[in-house]
Length: 96
Image (tube, rainbow, N blue to C red):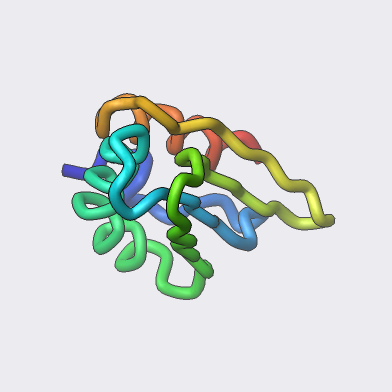
């Protein structure tokens, strides 16, 4: 279930979210589980926010957040559990 931080409207300064994962790699398993669990509540709370998922074989799991004025931040998610991914993801999105 999505945490409270992920189900509320995100900061207006946040312009785009990208998640890079491997479709089959073990290192991306936590990120894939996080995506399955949290994508729908995130989009329901933030319907106008672009939330892009990029899948590529062998790529390490990472999340990127683009804020206003072109500021972009990212976090490594490779090898983390779904709950650890959720925590890192929440920290990234609130770092505006």
